[in-house]
Image (cartoon, rainbow, N blue to C red; front, side, top):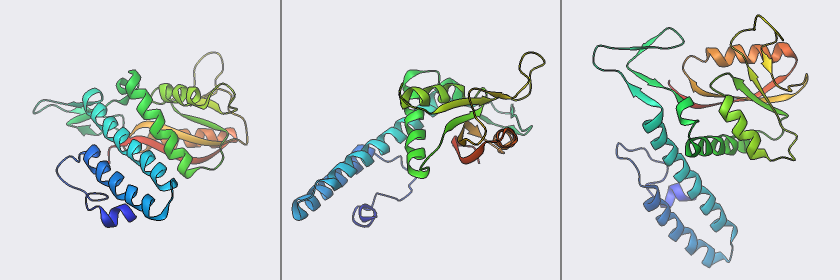
Length: 212
């Protein structure tokens, strides 16, 4: 909030793509002065973290445009899963199958979870869009973490285990659900219903891209 008050370019929208390095350089200078005046270091540490988040989001947007965004030629349309037609298509599965893309996505998701959820037992989402992201988040959690991952199939199989839940989800678990792209929310709503029917609780939902 202080930054928005004293650095005009922070927190404002513009048709011109912002330069995160230039903006954060002004922020760094401003907060360096604050640190000198009040003899504190914590603000400086917070600015570095904020700078990192800004740059990561900017890089992620660039990667989405490069690897996940497609536009049809004039007169042609994509048919979305919802049945609607669109001139453009977002497929974040392509983004999540390159190292830099998956790294940025899972770090942004983890930052959002850390800000909004105090305690959760499992993280999952609709397959196939969430598959790579779940794997990335479990890897990020580390080998000693007790976090459980799971996937929700679009429909039950006709063989083997018929459950739509894949993974060690347990009844009573508090869960975070993630999705790569949300249009109408149909896939997430279906996944929420499946998880609740299983006996677990959905406490947070996160989408990488909201088409709306």
